[in-house]
Length: 202
Image (cartoon, rainbow, N blue to C red; front, side, top):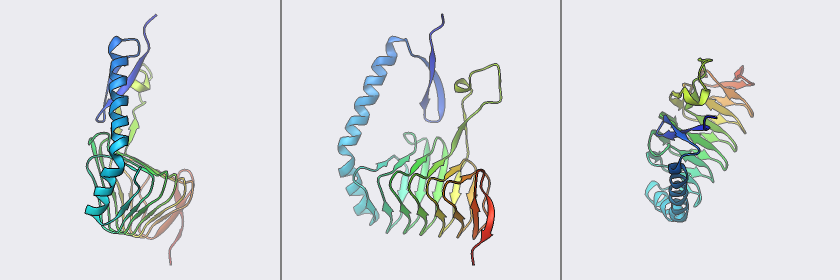
């Protein structure tokens, strides 16, 4: 019986590692140790970031490398994950990112404009697994990435998901629980799965 294999991310490229190989356990221990050390120094790192950015960053927020935060922002207990620098996140001045938000940048960029509201349990995801081949496991087909761009003065509602390649125009509103798979025009209100225009602001 062939050993099971898992896809392990290196940046946004995936490589195969046997779950039964001796190296798997040692790599897992090292990974866990690095994560634990990072968690210990996180409050100090976030305090320094807060002072430099003139913003508030929650002491336990996970803020990866290549994350640029503007002035006057409020960053809650969230996850801003660039996969060890494989991607980039930029957050404009005065934007609020609430608790339990996940920004997962497997590659490319997430750009959030000024004075936006990114509400709790929202996820912004720049990567997705390829699955077009039937003769190969999905976990072996790699991932494809696309930038996410959110304009100024946008409101991304509770538990919404914004997927790769999407641009949301200035002043747009995404209703709670929506899944945004295509571009949203400025000042447009969208809702649903997938999200569709339902109204226009003003």
